[in-house]
Amino acid sequence: MSKELFDAIHYLGKEKGIDKDVLIEALEAALISAYKKNFKSATNVRVDLNEETGSMKVFSRKEIVDEVEDTQQQLGIDEAKAIDPTYQVGDVVEVEVTPRDFGRIAAQAAKQVVTQRVREAERGVIYNEYIDREEDIMNGIIQRVDSRFVYIDLGKVEAKLAEPEQMPTENYRVHDRIKVFVTKVENTNKGPQIFVSRSHPGLLKRLFETEVPEIYDGIVEIRSVAREAGDRSKISVYAQDPDIDPVGSCVGQKGQRVQTVVDELKGEKIDIVEYSEDPIVYVSNALSPSKVTKVIVDETDKATTVVVPDNQLSLAIGKRGQNARLAAKLTGWKIDIKSETEAKELGILTSNVQGEENGEPLFNADEDLFE
Image (cartoon, rainbow, N blue to C red; front, side):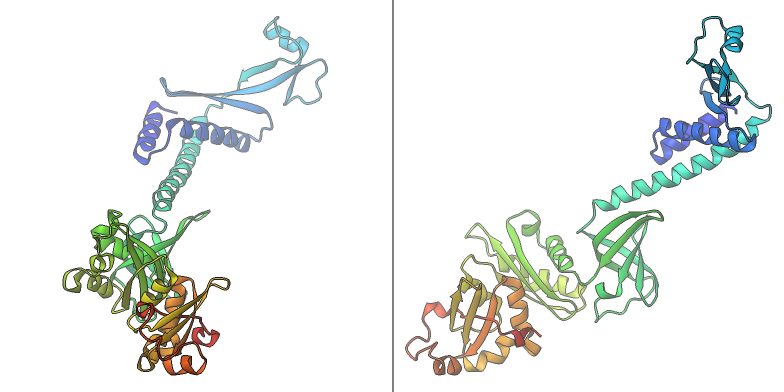
């Protein structure tokens, strides 16, 4: 083995970010294995690598015993003392057994082990880089599409966009640029596996963080997101400073900020509502754009009954119950919506109550609204 081989190992280690000692230890193990394989030896051996001179030596290791039972593993005490009178039973004798043509075998072993370790190290570097990007947005380019996945090039690795994570309103075409939300990073035998989503609520949250400086700076906080990807979403926001309008910050001047997010999500409708600790206020806000007459809260079942004007009932419930369903997901409260007429018939609302509670809602969700 020449010194140039060590220089090459050092260079590769530095270039690929691998500790030199890791490569040397791996090389020693590979050389021991190569020696035993090529020379059909069961003897315990040690490989000595000298980086200064570029030399390599193989030493057979035998234990000194009184009676030899295995000549490949043991050496008699009399024979050992002939080598060095100070040897005792139990000591280990090392005898150089370096084959004449072992340099060629060593070079092949070095190539294999370095290639393997470099590949493992590169996988490790990629995994460590992308594990930090879990629950974050990344830009990629669509490479190919099959019946199960859309494969997206993220730069150093190919991510998988599974069918359930795709937006039903989108068509995925090769070479298109796309923003995705990283849901999971796994380190497998085949290397890092990156799974991404276009339908995850986290994508909506990260897009707003990107577009709204107040969210990025922590002045405005996103409290909750409810999403039916490709169709409609609701997002609740909060600002501790009463002088800050959290909804206005997210909407932006002339609606520019929210429109950027809508465009990225291919026209997905987004309702931005203000968060409140008061469930009456919060549920009322969440049912936007419908108006709410009154909200009755049942703390035990975490349920609300919401009364809305007769002409607002269909708007409050939404198409196929979508508005009520998203509001319930957003707030974490069950919501049962009733018209003023029905509420009066049930005795929930009397004619002189309309307009009280500052027009706040009453909401308890029927199961059929969420089918």
